[in-house]
Image 1 (tube, rainbow, N blue to C red):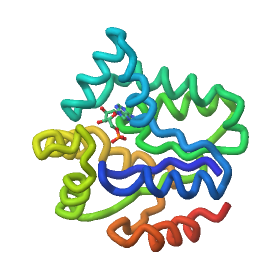
Image 2 (spheres, rainbow, N blue to C red):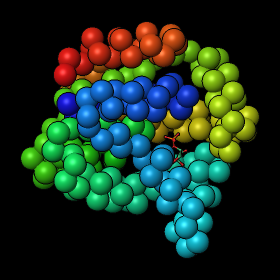
Image 3 (cartoon, rainbow, N blue to C red):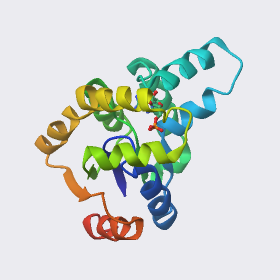
Image 4 (cartoon, rainbow, N blue to C red):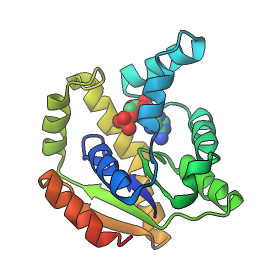
Length: 183
Ligand code: AMP
């Protein structure tokens, strides 16, 4: 199972990815989590990453793609993976297509987590992460609309997009995902 979880911040991608990765026994690859770990170092790069995250901006594509390339070259990916929060821009999606063809892999599904913006904002405000302040949330939602939402059409054209209604209780969304993506 090779699956991309696409959708706005606060849609529940991380929660569902953790549940299904354990169930399918595949790695849960979250670029947000990877960057949060990288940001803890005392290096200029870590400081740069902290800056993007705290402002709600995207880490530049070249760096993001490099991090994902290194991750997908590790041995545990042969059984599949769930990519959570990557790709987030069209150049990232193009790079992923190339990377996967280099690695002799292909993504099976792109699941689009759909939910209304007022619910997203309420969820993000309730989460309490350092980048979940009202101003930063606003930036992240704008960045999502301008940079990431175009990927819905990108993957729809590839015939890989499936949609899940994400404004439902966690167990219901998990059940929908199981049904959409038979392992
Ligand atoms: P997330 O946990 O997925 O909401 O990501 C938190 C933050 O990490 C984002 O606001 C970005 O600063 C950074 N980030 C995560 N994934 C990506 C990505 N694919 N491209 C660029 N920046 C990312």
